[in-house]
Image (cartoon, rainbow, N blue to C red; front, side, top):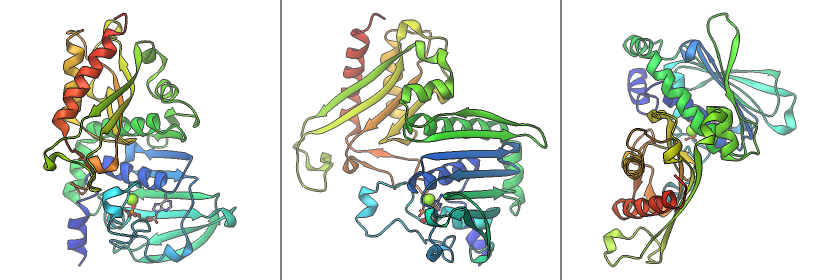
Length: 352
Ligand code: ADP
Ligand code: MG
């Protein structure tokens, strides 16, 4: 029934940040090169994500927001080697249960006409209408949690902290996605729309960081390209590959980090960003290793860190939590040891 649906929906959509993540990830999955995120009243009123991706095929309208309907998962093995962000078909179904939810979508051949889709709370398609639209999809979430008074009050009470997290996570997507033009706007009440940041697409992560965090941040950063070679292990349980080979497992960590001598004050945790294969994620142990090494050179400050860990999809699990935020790196201990050595070498090679 409806209650069960609402409770289960709590699994993937737990707060404002998860709404934003799910919608942005859908846009990336759809091959968008432009993503615009618009907030009204910091998302309390509305969150809109507009992309120029592939659009949604009319075949999928009916099932789009039904639970466990996804256009992305074709075989079981996809689950372990997943390249796309989505895989559960839960986000849109949850959003129907938890907000006033609608979609406008247009496939290339139909522009400048698109279809507006409205849904029942259950996720069933309520109706469609033809509207003006360009290629891509706009998803609109209004009055989030309005039908769950306790959750809604909690959201309103914590909005300041929630908003901080939302802006931080959008900044991470905007910085790491070099091929995507990102923009984030916010409108308070009937006030003027303000742009929080925007990137241009087709530029380096360095240029993205300037767009998001400001040029001043960059003067203090050194480019980082750490190569970690994990030797094959004889302990089978430590082997990562399901293919059965025990070859070298190379990990590359690409990004930017504060030059110890040029730190501009303490960077708060939202300025320490970690990605696994360009997917933003919290990696507390990795963060700890970075900070430890940095402390060896500069004890009074903490670094800006932008680190994308590139590694084979067999070397980690992303599917351990419903919201996909927890990532388990296999062989983490050895990886962290190697990381500390490589980072120390990087700092030693600088005139810090
Ligand atoms: P999942 O991403 O796990 O497949 P979702 O509930 O997030 O599940 O989305 C359901 C389906 O809706 C997706 O599989 C996709 O086909 C479609 N979809 C959602 N957002 C977009 C978008 N921005 N562009 C194109 N298709 C989308
Ligand atoms: Mg999704």
